[in-house]
Image (cartoon, rainbow, N blue to C red; front, side):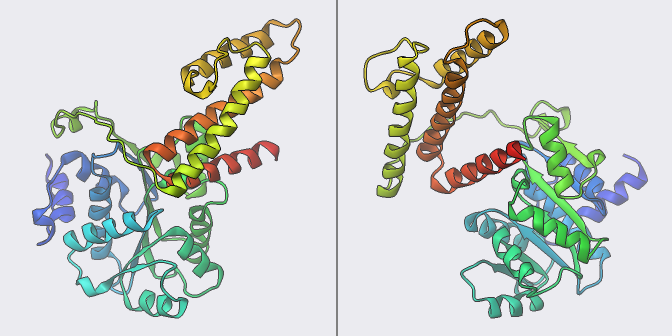
Length: 336
């Protein structure tokens, strides 16, 4: 390692609290590249995106004026509280300079807490609402960290916050973190445009990268079932009923061979994926297309409904609502 690299690494990690933080070369390398630059970090879950954010925040504190703020955003209150614990543990800042601001706190108190504190944790909707109502400014905010940054599409709060940040503080730095930026280059480009991140400032690691492999332990994945709450059960059975209608329609058009009811217990997602390919092929071949376009649309709805059921069963209603918001935004874009 060169003397310059050693100095950069020491600058990122020399801190009493950070001494207890496990140093991973790839985290330090990415953090160095994110300093003073709007950046997107893409890492699989469990590889330490938050630690990279802590390293960048630590360096930001050291080079910006003492009255500068750092804002950390995450979609849910539990995630915000988790970040509060991590940042307050490792940043060399008095814990009384940290605060969590959510919609549960009265606006007048939020204003006071925002002014008094240096490291501020928000749910995006709360910060957006406060900016819309001009309760405070981002002029003295040196760094905004967008966790779960793949949400930065459409009308989601991240996009409006980024616009305000750019306008109020053009020199402010944005750090976006995600495990899933999008399945296409276009989606990644839109995400970066919405957060004012140059495409050249995307830093990606996977579990196959050499500098990551040495830190990985063998991993086993287990699915543990839980009982649905009353509300979750109502939503689950409501979605299932709609799915049953869609599958029945496809059987009536003779695009699904399964006839025994209930269909949703016999037909699986793989069947609809196979059918989707068959329908697209029929359209491309020409000839009689009676019912094909309609079936293609219904089949697409069925795939969405299958995914919604999985979300309710495995991740809960909060994640389902985020997904539905994405579906709505995608539909708006398709019409425009």
